[in-house]
Every structure is written in structure tokens, then in C-alpha cells.
Length: 386
Image (cartoon, one colour):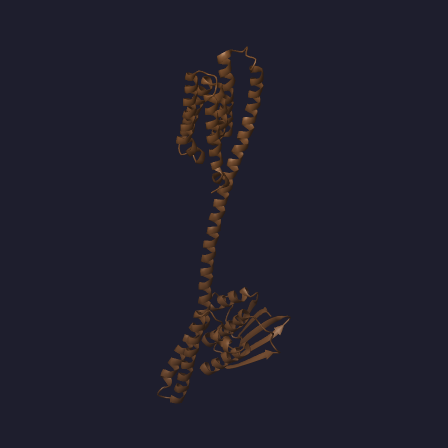
């Protein structure tokens, strides 16, 4: 509700007081009983017209012809009241605001001027132009016309500004609701993307390892039971680690590998797993003590290493892999290099891993660099703020 609607009751009070005061003045006027009766009936007609249609028009017109019909009725009763009793002119304090509230400013100014002139016109009709009172009445009428127009324009501007502000508030509220909806949708989409990256970097890779180990077990059961047993233990351990990762994701915790160990230990464990599963020789080198890193940064580094090792496991045909973790110019650098078959980085890939890695890195203000060519191995470097 805008300010105009909140304080509209004050106009109702003004209308009521003006009607009651004008009626009382007419009753105690010196005119005949017939004139007083006609004047009071006309004043009552103005009040009824306001109560029946005027109030609805002020709060919002619902038909194009209604303002003109209402205006015509009010002006007719106003003329009747003035010609029956000049004292009825005081009802203009009631009528003028109604005209400005229901009509355009220019149109209301015209009808207001006509209404104000009805008083001198009725006085002239009764006593002619020789009345001494006209010397005072005519200048006062001119002043009243000017005052009515200025006051009416001021009132109209207040109402228009109030309605405009109400419309702006409604637009702002609608915009805020739309922003809130879009924010919720963006948050949902971001959460889906985050979960997709987490699943790809942890559960999917773990399940791939389990499938690979299961296939190895099937081929070794009859020929090499000892190797099959070792791979079976490794598959069970991978399954337990996957279960721990799933529970950590559900509980919105950090990776289970970082909850139980440092980043360096978690990277060493990833290298050891690669060697156990594939026989690829993996080494890790840490250049000096690492600064205390936020969990979000450690997660990015660990997931990048997991993704790089997963790609090496599936595609590289490498025999050696080295991981290097160091601090350079206030930034933590992770490098993963293999001696595999390499590939063309410009060639399109349908995988999600590298794109997810870049997205993660961007979120912490880091960069990812990939160097590779067919037959010359691959080097992945990732830098994040320390």
C-alpha cells in the first residue's frame, strides 16, 4: 500500500467536515425554506455521487465513461445548490479535490474554474450587477480560482508521484523475486556441477579401478592366485575408500584423503595406488615446506592430481610418472609428468575431467597448463595462490 492509500482517510474526514459545515451554513442562511431545501438536496446528491462512484474512481477508475458521468452529476448538483443558496459555494472545498482526483489536471482545472464561477453567477442572477458585494466577491473569486488550480495541481502531483513510487516498488519487488529465483537456480546448477566434478574425480575413478582390478583377478585366478589375491585386497581397499568418499560428500566434508592425512601424504598415496594397480613407477617430490593452505586449495590440488593420474592410467601407456609439489613466487605449483604416448591438446575431447579441473582451479584463482604431443609424453602444471 502506497502513502496516498494509507492517508486517504484524511481526505474522507475533510469531505465529511466540509459537507456537514456547508449544510449547516445553508440551514442557518437567510434564504427561503424552499431554497434551503433545494440546496440541501443538491448537496446531498453531491455526497451520494461521491459515495457511490467518486470513491471508487479515486482509488482506480474501472470504466472510461464513468468519470465524465460522475463529473456531470456533481456539476449539475453543484449548480443547483449554488443557485438555490450562494452559501453552498463552501462545498467547493469538497468538490474541487474530487475533480482533481478523478480527472486529468487540465480537465479538472476547467471544471474547477466553472464551479468557482457558479457562486458569483448565482449572486448576479439574484441581485444583478449593481450589488456592492460584487466588488469584493469578484476579486475573491479570481483569487479562489488561482488558489484552487494551484492546490489541485499540487494534489494531483502528489497522487501521481505516490502511484509512480508504488509502481516502482512493485517493479523492484518483482525484480528482487526474479533475482532470488535466478540465484536459487544458479546455486542449484553450481551445486550440480560441483557434485558432478566430485563424483567424476572420486567415485567414478574408484569404480573404474575396481572394474580394472576385477578383470585382472578373473585372468589371474587360475594362473597366478597370489597376484589375484593381492588385486582382490586392493579392490576391497579401493571400495572402502570410495565408500568413505561418498560419506564425506553426503556430509559435505572435505575429501576423506585430506581429512585423515596431509596433502603431501594424500598425493603419495595416490602415486602408490597407481603403482599397485598398474605397475607404473610413480615418484613424488616436494620442494621445501609447504605453507598452510585453505582446504579449498588443497582439494583443487588433490583432485587435479587424481584426474591426471586417472588419465595416465587409462590413456598414456606410460611406464614412469613423477609428481612435483613446490612453492614458486608465492604460488603453489603441482606438476604431473609421464613418459607415455602423449596426445594433441588441441584435439577435441568428450571428457569431463580437464574441463572440471580448469573450473575448480579458476574458482581459487589458479591456472592450468597442459603440454603434450604425440610420442613425447604429457606434462600437466597447475598453479594456485599459496
